Length: 368
Ligand code: ADP
Image (cartoon, rainbow, N blue to C red; front, side):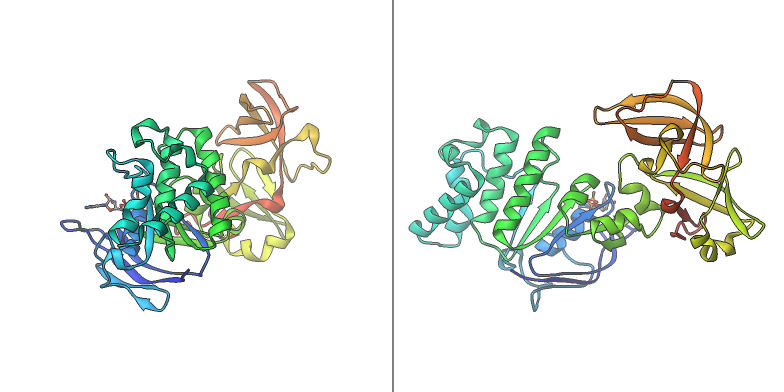
């Protein structure tokens, strides 16, 4: 068990000019589950590998607990890492793979057996202990890789995209397995993924990265409801938040978002923040679940209703995605399973104006 502190951590690869990781500062509490998320190439793995001691640090400091570990070799950092490709030895049995790290460290045989059996029980892989990796499925291999990490009883677990090689169903299974494991082990976890669903469902806190720079650190629902900028708003959530450009219009002390083809009234509570943008261009954001078919809404008014064409209706079972077109912008409404408007017909949709976001078109920072 340990806290982790990163202070202005940076990485420039040999021959590289740009910073793969750019001045990352982060405090991870003891027993916390933190997810680093962002698109491919944003510096997640590099950050994790510097914490693990597998990559040299260009600038900055890393503490594990009270210990500055910049110059501590990986094997002495008391961490265990689980990789996407499992990194198991093909010629060894599952038992031997799990025992290998302990053997290297000179643990007595009885202790090794006890720990491997305990881990195998936690992961429900007792019956595979005598098999070799090639005799196992992807999900089973990943369990073995987890087992090999568990037996070490490390202070910190580091996961680098551990589920990306699994099929969609197995990913969901392993996601809940890791969640249960975490409850049981009560250890600090740092988990790297490009999958925002994994980030949302697993993390106590999420760290969203882009181009080596942290964009926001917060609990999952805060990231979702109060994104720090346009990038975070669109990266977190599926379907991605609807974004439209337009201008802020002021009329009779009221403010409107004018998209060009439609106009909606901004709620009075937002007036003060939106006032400086009167007459200026702005980016309007609304999540698909905050767009409703007018037929099913009682508080529709000309202030929040717009006319659109429904171009595609995509039934997903429990819900339906409507692909809408205002004549200028395309956007998605996520509505109930019963809701099946006609395709290529005009319809009216209602925006929940209490839930909308605004972003600065230049800085992309969140205004509301
Ligand atoms: P992520 O894990 O978010 O996909 P990485 O940390 O792997 O991103 O990579 C961050 C950046 O560093 C990328 O631009 C990548 O191309 C570069 N990079 C990663 N590893 C190396 C390496 N060994 N040598 C040079 N550049 C690298």
